Image 1 (tube, rainbow, N blue to C red):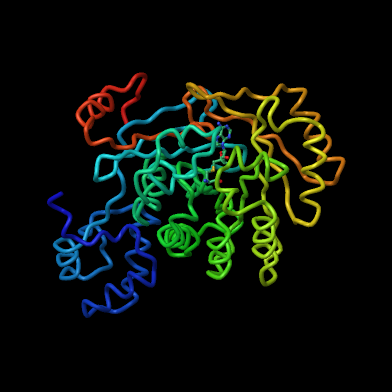
Image 2 (tube, rainbow, N blue to C red):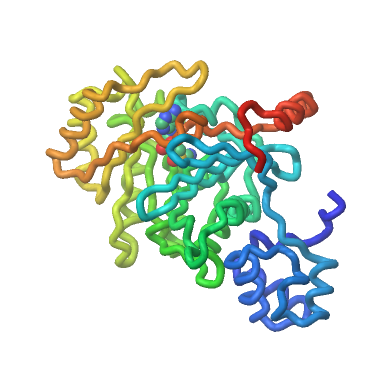
Length: 373
Ligand code: SAH
């Protein structure tokens, strides 16, 4: 906390950093130099930033810092998935997941501490909502993960893709999420292609339009989960505010924007006996007829006291076949890292409850099955 008077440069976009340097009588190009040190080389100590003048390095050490959330626990799943518990300054913790696949590595990033949407099948919802993450805390997850994954020589891109599919609803934390995504895309920072950065939303319609207006053109995923409003109202309460027709219209505007010929990824968690019938598959196929999209079917991942069951393999295959026959690219997402509760909808972090702070810290310092960070 003694550092709190220093300006944290971690979450600053190139424009913000340039403004910061100009305000202190420096040239704007310092922003590019510092971005490269922080985000490309993972350096947080100003003394090591050798292309800055000695005077500037000293001044920065006194007035600024480069700080990411601290990794307090690491778990590795049998399939190579990693999950990190990251502690924030106020004692809250969030989770970040790394999923290695053939030819790519995807980092699943959180945008809020907890979540306010209260979707009935998601364990993050059980935590309630505590607060939004700052841009530094969002991009800091990528910074920390990259530092931790230690690429082999010449392999700069262990993390080739980022999905905002961790804890929280990214479109309810708009500015920090946009700032963090612009650093993901920024050539002098992470330089990821815009097709490899995906924002997933339950469908906050006005914010979806604002996202389109930023021109960032990141890939979009929509958590749909039901083929009609009556059922979606139950599963995703946000639907009562922004019903399916409005959400799909906003998605069409988003992907139709200025030659941005992408498709929305429609996410659909398959819940046994709830949304997985053949009739519902046909209803979904009809619903999506005018939406440029592909469909990701997600077998439900259970968590303690969840009231749903995963659909059977046969039901999942039948559901997929109906969508494929209707012409949709449809894939069934393989549950990853489920032995360490790192799969979709299983991220819970530690949402601070002040009255029980001491107890929770004790639990954190000696977590079951933890490997040292
Ligand atoms: N709030 C955003 C970002 C979270 S993304 C959104 O809703 O898109 C997390 C994804 O995992 C969403 O598609 C979510 O619906 C899905 N999910 C949540 N709980 C799940 C569970 N128990 N099993 C499988 N997928 C789940």
